[in-house]
Image (cartoon, rainbow, N blue to C red; front, side, top):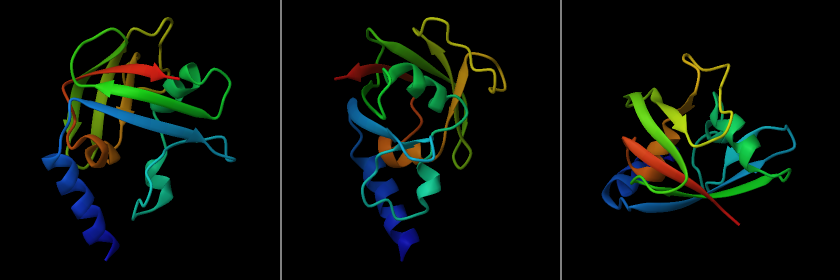
Length: 136
């Protein structure tokens, strides 16, 4: 049943694509970042931000345990992510531009981050370009 619910979430996200998304993240007691996704039907561990996404959130958090961002699927003023490679079930690698001193030593190539397949449930696809701006 939980996999049917997950499949419905993916289909809904793919059909109802938007140009702008508001996404929030929380740093939990385990000191790890997770995307806030109410009613996520699979393991909570799937929502963890790793491989550079967590590092970016540490830059954006201003010492708090919450980050709210706006993701726009066009190039505007903000942090720019450009897709380098993606695979449906393996996530997507993005270069990052617009963050002073950004370098992810854990990335396959420096200055990249990885977004897991949960991105498909939020955005409906792995966009070629994204701009991130922090919301207050």
